[in-house]
Image (cartoon, rainbow, N blue to C red; front, side):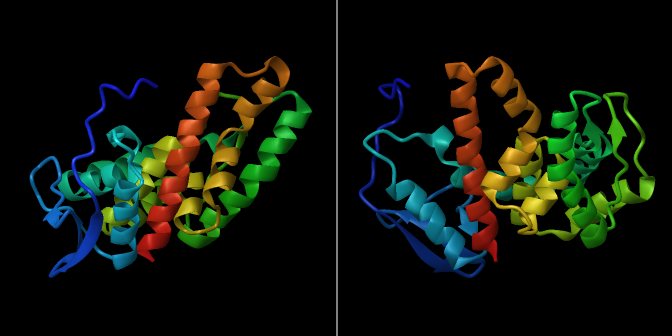
Length: 236
């Protein structure tokens, strides 16, 4: 990637400061602002330290797109408070067509890998959250129980803005509400969740190989997944 067009680093050190509403991140003593010009404040000291470390890890040029934790914080502060119902509905829609519910009709080995990875996670969300989803063979959509979809909405709306933001991002990244809930709940770590979401993709790679572009996309997803795990852990 050509970094010559990226903004130059304009600060020496990122630190954290205690605020009435949590912890802010400062660059050379000046608080970071969100795109909406609000002081970037997070609820735990550990999360603030993790975001500060993200800024301290930057080189002479700032890779703002790669600063996943900062972007998550911006969304949690600027957008999530006004879109909570929409985010809960988005998670419910993912659950309604969840990738973990669609097993390949063939080959048998692919179906076995899917079932080995996905069934324990479906069982877990069923016990943990009352989200009982019904798997099918093939790609023809099958309606999921209304009570399960409502359970997803209810749980999503019970979360604070910071955790709800990350759960929604995880769902989009993994293509699955089941895997996102398992990651948010600590049942899966970042590597496990990403592998579970890429079973079909990895099968195709085994058969046909992987090109450089697809490899770069996968590496980017892995970085985002790792950042999400740090976020969840830092929230406590």
